[in-house]
Image 1 (cartoon, helix red, strand yellow):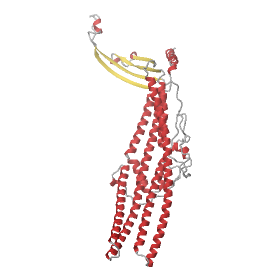
Image 2 (cartoon, helix red, strand yellow; image 1 turned 90 degrees about the horizontal axis):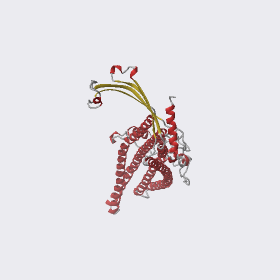
Image 3 (cartoon, one colour; image 1 turned 90 degrees about the vertical axis):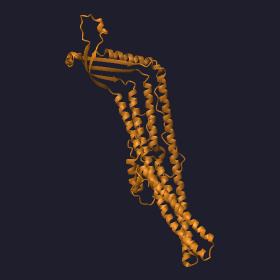
Image 4 (cartoon, one colour; image 1 turned 120 degrees about the vertical axis):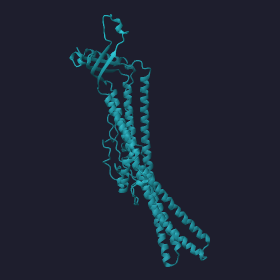
Length: 498
């Protein structure tokens, strides 16, 4: 019959739960979340594979590899994101610890004097009692709260989902950093290529000025022609200075992204800009949800908010806890370890919410509102992802079409330069015609380099829009999972896009 009181307490708790059951809200079902992105109607070339986890290696540029490696080690922004992950992981540990058995030990010694005007004054004068006494205690106390309604379990699952969201946000921060480093680096390479062309243009314009000055000096041309040539030379030099300034600014920005001083940047050497592929994966409409870290973070926030509604709902149910105590207590320290000093206690406790002044309903309403906000954020993330992919894909197509036309102009100007040089050799034209043709060709080539730099920048933006190498793990503990949710997050099934 030792367990009869406990059984009666549990029965009473169940009965009380039934009595107040009419006020308990129904358990919320999992919200309907879209499992694809609205890319229907996007006329974009497909067939490319998803980016790899280390997608930047597809450009085959050792300098870029080195820069990103430094950024991943030293960036303060990435360290901040990492701290959020660690904080979320500790929250999971805290929630799990609070749900377990709590055991505390205590040991104390107390010396106290009782007032003679207190209880001692009620004793006859013949009782000569020393008002000073000692109290020694040594014991253990254990407390366990039954999680019959799943409140603590839901709290642990909510903390786990928040940890997953923090990990996805960390991946998003890493992708943003990697993308910014690559974009700044290739922008610098584009400036270097244009600077090489600008130097050739300055040489050509300087030669044109020299010829114009000679013709003006011999009275063949008006002085206005010489001034026009000088103005064109100044404009070319201005472009050269602008590109030099742009290159320096990009190096400063690159150092800031890496978290180092500009003087600590590795030596960078000019390299040709890479050719890019503007296609998108065939299954982008379905798999993009699992490939975008921002969508994954929003998805985990929905899962966490849903678990929090379970926690708020469980507050309507009674809590039953049991506290057990065992120890030693004695007025005489010398007798503390004797068997007669043993003390035991068992305390079942029942907490039943009856009149909470509307706090439970308000708390539950707040959790529902937070769930609705998380769902709205998720839907917004999906829509933004679709817009991002479509925008970058269409921009890439437009740049590719412009590069084709630019290539046609370059071929035509190369032909003009060839014919003008032939006439110069034949003596039918002076050097000015071939210099003008060369200047025009250099201008077209500069435009081609600028377009190629835009194509690389757009390709980087498309990689980011596709989520880089991220792949969302399965939503453990949820009632619905993404259509594509393998457990790896490294993108091992992806292949090179270039």
